[in-house]
Length: 152
Image (cartoon, rainbow, N blue to C red; front, side, top):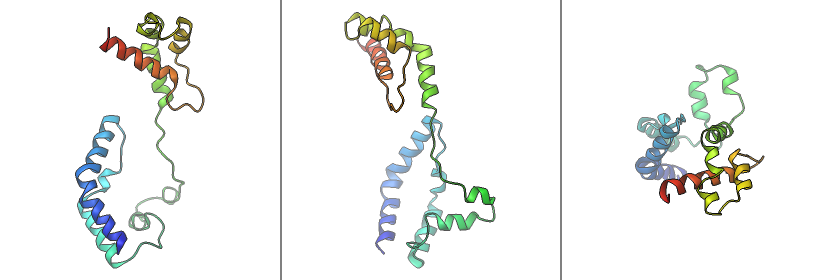
């Protein structure tokens, strides 16, 4: 079937040569555990073989995986709601500004009139507005440190 062919194509081309390697490196560099250990060639071959014999189109996502481990895991694990990984961005941000925020106050950006001193002082405290993904304070700090390292 088409879904089996697409799975084989992804597994034996992009995932094998690029996707898994990138994911593994990014995970290790960020100290984030990924599910890459589940991408074992024997598992992939088994799943592709199963999909050739038994369609899983009508099943819930990961039905076969759930069935395989249902006797090994408690019910509360099997039925808990899905939740994503939430990196501690705010604590990282605070730590950066505790260590380096003062560099904005009278740094390269102020000396070259890119930032006004009062704005630089405000940004040096590391404000992180609600809903911001990459706050201006972080961008200013990165630019300050880059300027110091490259231009100064």
